[in-house]
Amino acid sequence: MTLPRPGHQEAVARYPYLWDLCYAVVALAVVAAVLAQSGTPARDRAVAVAAVAVIAVLYAFWGRRRDSGPAFVLAILVAFAAGTFAVSTVSYLLFALSPLIFMALDARPAVVAVVCANLLPLAAGSVRSGAGFLTHLGPIFVMSAAVAVWLGIWINRVIEQSIERAAFIAELESSRAEIARLSHEAGVAAERTRLAGEIHDTLAQGFTSIITLLQAADPGLADERIALAVRTARENLAESRSLIAALAPSALAAGSLPDAIRREAARFTEETGTPATCRVSGTARPLPTAVEVVLLRAAQEALANARRHSAAANVAVLLAFGADSVRLVVRDDGRGFEPAGAHGFGVPGMRARAERVDGTVAVRSDPGTGTLVEVEVPA
Image (cartoon, rainbow, N blue to C red; front, side, top):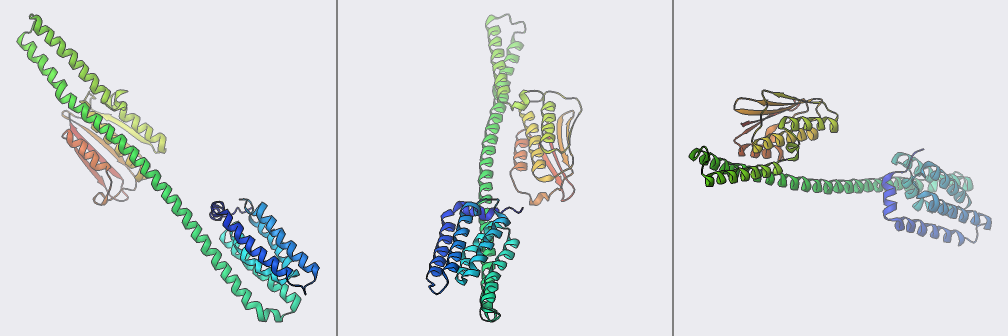
């Protein structure tokens, strides 16, 4: 069974009183016109009024449901046919029936049903008055059917566009909220990274220098004051390192940089179903926190871009430890892009972070050939 068009059902749900008012006004006008025809047999008028009432009941208890569909339309057409054959004035009910049909059916079946509904008065008139009825009033009903079909299709398209626009606006609002959340998280992460770097480059380095100078002045720490100063400096160095560890990303706090990048690749595979391999070459060694953060964020950003844009079948991540540098390479075999025409903040943000530790970022891609992101930092 064909379900009703969601667009019309949404419109009915949003403005139910308008559709009720439309049918009520037309139906009451038709009933009043039928009852005013004193020359028409009372039995025919009773049948016509009953037909209008039956359609009203069907609409009230069936037409609003999502499963009304063809069965509902067939029922109201049968009732309409009975009323039209009894009293021709019932044919004016088409002004209300055509919208009901378009509410219950998809566009093409609705067009067929509306045309059939407009043929019923012609059939009834030809039975009562003969073939001459078709000659005089046939063109009017043809025009009425054409107008009803055009109006139904137009209303259908307007409703569809309204629903599409509402969905687009909802999607934009959702995207805006997500961007705000990600921007906030990125800002917090960037500030934490900056503070960790500042502590590492100032306090931690300063305490290390103090310890070195004091031990050079008194290698055996015979002077109690120098020994106390060295002990105090070491305690504060330990505190500063604890602060650096606390400010580092949680992914690094749970293990080494290679482990963190392996987890990012595994998460990418779990979320997308696309295989993402991770390989570590060279001898892994601890790196300054600021350098590890740059490499981890670069891996996360490159994998996020592959997830959103590449439609790749395979992704490969390489973390290569060299003698005086560390290189991160993320390659995918997706659709690629033209770097010169790319927009967004991912790659510029990656470059800005790399430049803070004297690193470089290279992006190589062409449409249809995949993308390669390479980050190299001294270490």
